Amino acid sequence: MSQTRLFTLPPEEGTMTEADGGAMSSEKRLQVLFEKNLKELLGIDFLEREYSISEGCRIDTIGLDEDNRPVIIEYKRQMDEGAITQASSYLNQLNKNFDKFKFLVTEKFDLKRAKSVKRNAAIRVICVAAEFSKHARGAAETHNIELVRYREFSQVVKLLALELPEETAKRLPNSKKTSGKGRARKAAGRSSPRGGEQERRYKALADFVASLGDDVREEPLKNYINFRCIGGQRAAVVASVLRYKNKMTLYVNLDPRQFTLTPGFTRNVRGKGHWGVGDLEISINSDEDLENAKPLIQESYRINSGRTVVPALSGAGGRVRGATGRASPGMDPRLPPVGTTILREYRGRTYGVRVLDGGFAYKGRRYGSLTAVAREITGYRTINGFDFFNLNKK
Image (cartoon, rainbow, N blue to C red; front, top):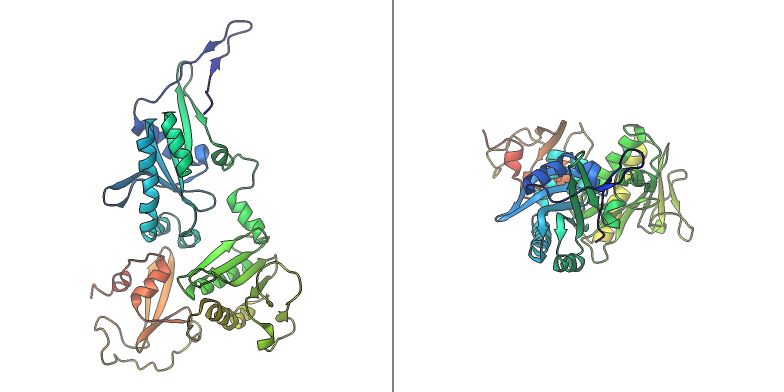
C-alpha cells in the first residue's frame, strides 16, 4: 500500500513541516468514529455494532452498501495475517445465519430493502487498521478482503487520512459513478416518481411474484428487472419487467401459442428483439391489467420452477369459499373460526390473513401454516406464526 504524508503549509515562503501521523489511542475510538461517519467514509449504511451472528462470533460493525450487499467491518490498530483470517471466517457464519441478518435489515430499515438483500450476493469484508503486515496483505488478497489504512494527524488540526482500495473508493457518495440507488432506477427505466401510481403498481407486482415461493429473487439489471426462480434446475427467469413513466411492460417465460392473446394487453414477441426474458409480452397500464396478468405469472412460475401453485383466491374483501364461521374439527384451539381475518400491525402496515379450513389465505395464495405467512411478511425464516400474530397470548 502507498504511504500517506501530510505537510503543514507555512506562511509565505517558510519551510513546510511534515505532520506526524499514527494509530489512534484505542480501537474502540476508531470504531465509534467510523460508525458515526460510515456513509461519508465508506459509502455504507450502518446497521449494528458488535453484531453477534452466532455463538462466539461477534462482528465489530455490520452494514449494507449501495447495492444492498452485506458489509463486515473489523478494526485493529495493526492487523496481521491471523486477524485477516478471522475476519474472513465471518463470511461463512453470516451465510449460515442469513435469515437472522435479513430480519435485522427489516428492523433497521424496512421489508422492501430486506427483500432486496440476496442470499447469494457477494458479502464484502473491510479491515481498517493503521498498519498491515506483509502477510496480512497477502491473506487479504487471497480472501478478497478490502484493506483500508488510516492515519490520525493532530499536530495542528485533527485530520484523518484514509488509503482506500479502488473498489472501495468508487462506492463513495462523492464518486462520479452513479449511486446504486440511481443505477437501480436507471436500470429498470424508473422514470416515474417514488410514491406515484406506477411505483405503487410495481410494488404490488413485486410483492405478488415474491409470494409465489421463497426461491424467487428480484434481480435488477441495466435495462430491466428479472424475477428469477433460483430453486429450479436452471435458475430460470419467471418474468422480466420494464418500467416507464406511464406503464409497465412484462415479459413472461411462456409459449404464447398456448394462450389466447388480447390486443393491447398480450402479444407474441417470439423472434422479435426486446429487453428482458420471455416470449409473451404483457402491457400493464392499470390495476385491472395487473390482476389479469397474475394467472400468467403464476403459470410461468409453475413451469419454470417445477412446483405447483394454488390458483389465486378472491381479492381483498372477497368471500372465501367454504367459510363456516365456526371452528372445524381438528383445528388448533388458538385459531379463530374459519372465515375470520387475522389482522397484524407490523412496521407501519396492516396485514390480513384469512383462516381457511385446513390452511390460510394471504395475498391470493394458500399457506399451510401461520408460520409460513409470517415468514413471507417478515423475511425471517425462524419466526413462529402464532407468536407473530399474537395468538399465543390468549
